[in-house]
Length: 294
Image (tube, rainbow, N blue to C red; front, side, top):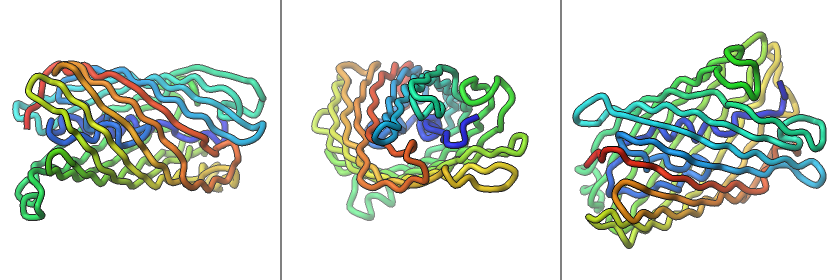
């Protein structure tokens, strides 16, 4: 297992659990690689692709992760939603191993998450906005991957996340926080991560026929914790960065929505040059099986 490997897309998996957000608040591409967070409705299937280029000079690597997910709500009011997410990654270069030109492909650990949402429109109205909501999510990451470890022989992980959103059409604003913890397995703990962020969205088109166009811009401060072995932190792991996340979301009918985004590093401080990020891009489609309503 590589000591410099981080849980690259834990944020994607966690925030896909923030499903069944109100249709009026559009922040779908605002989370950078954690996009589609509040886009996912109560009943959906989704496919997304995220690519990240890392490293510097001759020590570069690229990771492409395809994320398949599905979700449903067990309650009639759809205030509670469950999501199951399976990511598959192709990694090459230093992000995969210390051997230049090496490559690997495999499953990342799957995530089962639960999300609860509450309406805070009364509070939002008192602050001069029209509507608002708050969402919390928790999840269990299971060692079913094959990329970082043999199937079933890895640590479990836990995630927790939350967001608050307010809107005054056609503008919306959001603030969010996320934490990912990894357990110990045979003396080894992979580095988890945490981030905080926020952003704004401008949605000039959003009508009853399902036509939607939203331009979004977010910013986040992200921190990756150092991995440790036998309780000793590894000096060449961990770090932090600040990212800017421009993106768009659009749809031509109520059942299919698309997004595209780019994440650009503004500042970076990593303990290994191989973790330095050059860019992240993502795109995806979400098939809405049943609308949640507000």
